[in-house]
Image: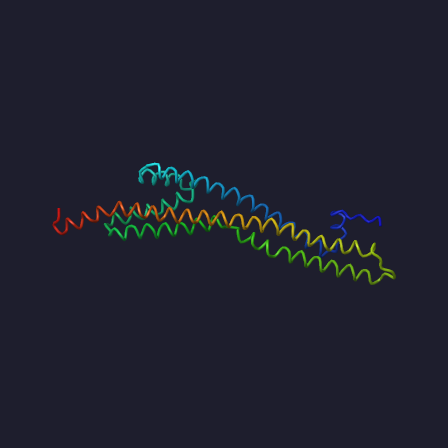
Length: 236
């Protein structure tokens, strides 16, 4: 019973297939943690920048100043700022063509909706990778365990007497694969659920802002449209 059951010795003593599975799971786990940290700081930055833009937007700054600032800070601004810029840009283009008030607001809303989709694609990037790691890693680890146990029992077939001391090392080596699979899957599951909740909250905030901004645009163009109709009908 002098067997060394440390993790390192178990991994080094495992069969080639199990070692390949363990190496794959460790690589996936490392990639998963990289995505987790990047996603955490990325979503946090998006949330902070969104707070800053909303505070500036509702502080009374004119739409023209906000639009110019959004254009100057397009690359490093918040997702909400870029959504606003897309809607404002389309609104100004349509207003130059003297479109109807409803067409102006609808065009700005469609532009913001397209910008929202682009921003959400960026925010949700690599989220599916975490979902895949969470769902697949335990099965990969289980495959390594089954293969390791099968390899261990094949090796025991040549022994005259099988005791716990001869069985335990092979089974322990195989079970390491399951442990590593869970080590890769559990953080991915937790992170995926955490990020999905935060992303949903951001999407709700973006949707709410788009509706509020559309209402602001509608209030701006409605008096001009009414004045234009009154001028056309001779009402002063």
